Length: 219
Ligand code: URA
Image 1 (cartoon, rainbow, N blue to C red):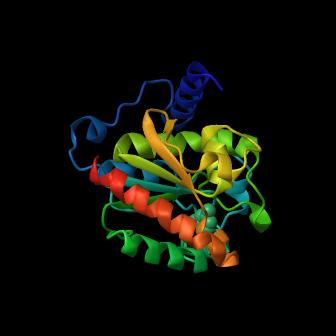
Image 2: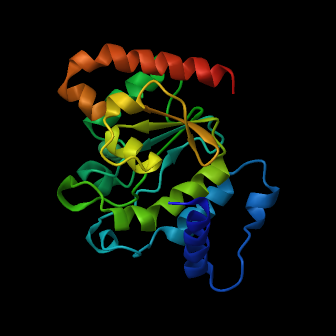
């Protein structure tokens, strides 16, 4: 999709949220601390029914972490536990993610923000449909505008291919490169659930996270 189409989609969606007037949140313009603006954005979108997942979800899973984070982790979509608790990565994969973050001297409260491309759980954890991604991805753009991370890390092939619009690309072709996501550097690595399924992948994931830590030292 071209940049002008994406801008059009973003404006269409803010129009649906705020009406015909161009809405500029004063907190975005003035605040050094994006926390209040993120919270206000959450309140604006938490009852979203732009796609059918709005009717099947239990909870809207906005994101969690430090609003001033230099590292933004983006997963695919909430699973059953996340849908139940309203927080991303709280199941087994999330526990592993917490350990990985501790190993790079961070936590979900400290210099990290965690969210998903999709804010609502697709039934039976199916992959999100492209129409659902089209509706939901502008929310992520707004989160990025507010948080202004130095680096985005896409967790897993689905998050990576969805964000980079490289449908059917293998994870191995996306790893090990610094991509550009709307002006912010983006790296793709393994989803922690994949590391739970196949522990042979752990050394390569650990290399990725050491690389991520070294990049963050420079941002
Ligand atoms: N998998 C994801 O991609 N996101 C979550 O929040 C949980 C599991």
